[in-house]
Structures are given as structure tokens and as C-alpha cells.
Image (cartoon, each protein chain N blue to C red):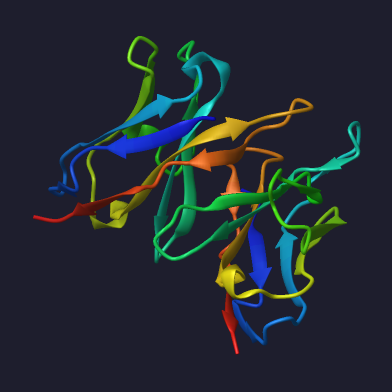
Amino acid sequence: QVQLQESGPGLVKPSETLSLTCNVSGGSITDYYWSWIRQSPAKGLEWIGYVYYTGTTFYNPSVRSRVTMSVDTSKQQFSLVLTSVTAADTAVYYCAKGVRDYGSLDWFDPWGQGTLVTVSS
Amino acid sequence: DIVMTQSPDSLTVSLGERVTINCKSSRNILYSPTKKNYLAWYQQKPGQPPKLLIYWASTRESGVPDRFSGSGSGTDFTLTISSLQAEDVAVYYCQQYYTTPLTFGGGTKVEIK
């Protein structure tokens, strides 16, 4: 079964760029849509967007101007880049596998363990 | 955006008692052509990621105990734990996947009395 593991810096300075990677094991990265979701006390669970191995993406309008997602099929990894971060971007960031059926959008199973990213100088 | 509103924010229940968690969407998330409600429920225990419990509002994920059940349609949904066990202490979230952006409820914390 698919397992996910996030990696990346735990501390990012304000105005700089947050970059995270999610490693996919136990399944092919070409078979699913992959999402990033973050969780903070202030905003709760917030879906950031999804990426497909073809490069197709969809981003939450709340972060659309600052976010880029991509897939590296050779490494079985997908990534998140969020620019111009502020303290409001401090959160636990999760990667997750999207599950679809009947033409729906995604519910998520499984999720990675999550990685805390703090934005602070 | 579709706003998902959960109630109550928290509840304290004795072991073996029934737990009912409500989730209300700001728009109808029943898709008429498929007759399916685009709603999932998750359980999050401390220090862990959310775990999928239910999708299509009432379909239990494989391996989820049958004391967990989902019901509702349109804009009003319920997650029920028929007999609370100690391992059910967690925060529960609903999520709509009817339209983008995908959105989650604020969570309901379940504790033992």
C-alpha cells in the first residue's frame, strides 16, 4: 500500500520560499492525484492544491499566486514550492494521495506523517 | 467556497455511550446524476495525520470498525460512533469533495468522561 513521507526545512524566514518534497512508496506516482494540505490552529485543515504526473495542477485560490507543485516520476516524488511566506504560513504540511471515483474530486488516503514548517526570522 | 460547519466543537462522553457529530455544508453536495453525497470523514489522533473513516457520506473505509457510521444528504451530515471506545479519543473532521477548493470542517474533539 502507498506510503508517503514529507521532507524539507522546518524553519523558513519571512519573505523567503518554502520547499517541501513528498516521497511516494508502495505504489506508482502515475496512478493518482497528489495533494498538499496544511494544518494550523488559526486556519484548521486547508487544502493547498493537487498535482498529477502529467503536470496538471489545481491550486486553492487562497495561495494560487504563490504556489507551484510538480512531480518527478523518476524519483517517485512530488513537491510544493510556496513563495513569499509569512507567519500565516506556519503550519504542519501534509502530503496526501487523492482517491477519486464516479468523476469526483478527491478524498484523501493515506496522508503522510506531516512536517512542521515555522516561518520566523 | 463551500463552508463546512461542524458541531459541537467538543464533547465528553462515557465509554460505551453513543457519539453524534454533525457537519453542515453551505451548499448542497449531493450530485444528482450519481445520487452520491461528496463527503468524507476523518479521525485524527494526537500527533498523527488524519485517517480516512468514511467517504460518499456513508461508505466505511476498509478496516474501520463498524461502530463508526455516516449518514445524511444534501447539506446535513452525521458521523455516529455507536459505542465509544477508549481508542476513539480524537478530533473528527468532515471534508467536501464536490467542488474546488476542497474544504474541511473545523473539527470536533471527542474525549472520555
